[in-house]
Image (cartoon, rainbow, N blue to C red; front, side, top):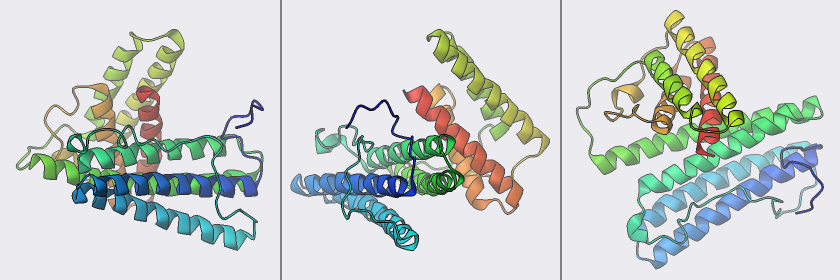
Length: 278
């Protein structure tokens, strides 16, 4: 990678944008394929099937990018190497297969897609032209859809793992947003000044979303009803739970304005998650 002082999200042409999009999908395909092959060698066909499913999902994304390239008539090499690796297998290529599960595999995939979403929002924010901004926003919307799909699969894997049944209803979304704000403010007391400032801004945004929900509530989401008891006891799980709820609402809300609001809130929660994990 050349050290020219540029950030990876500073993309200045459609050719560069489409090249990056293709490279990121190819990187993910190669990563999941390698993991599937390792699981087969280790006699874990169940996990091999999970990684093959993830590989097929990424191949579908790559097909979408290729169709976009064809429609744009932009010359892109068949194989593109990303300047900066983004796919992270989180040690799955090294850890003993006995310590892996379908839940952990889907969790890894979710975090990769969340990073990709944040990447494309940064590209859009720093775009030098409307064409590149609109293309990056489209990529971000597609990644948001991928996040929703994978988080749904992860929930299914979790419930299969725990055999959870008969879990009572949990606090509503507005209450959870307030709980998240409390966690963020508590965390702000433990970090550097710059980090604390960002955390407090995130807390303010969380409280604003809570007030907005109380003023104009969403429909019901089963995500909260099925949440594990104590899921809001810590910062990251609370953020994860709220994000799942927004993604579910964005998929099932019939009102277009409410659907758009849920999508916007989901994007904000992803950025919050990425920040607090770092």
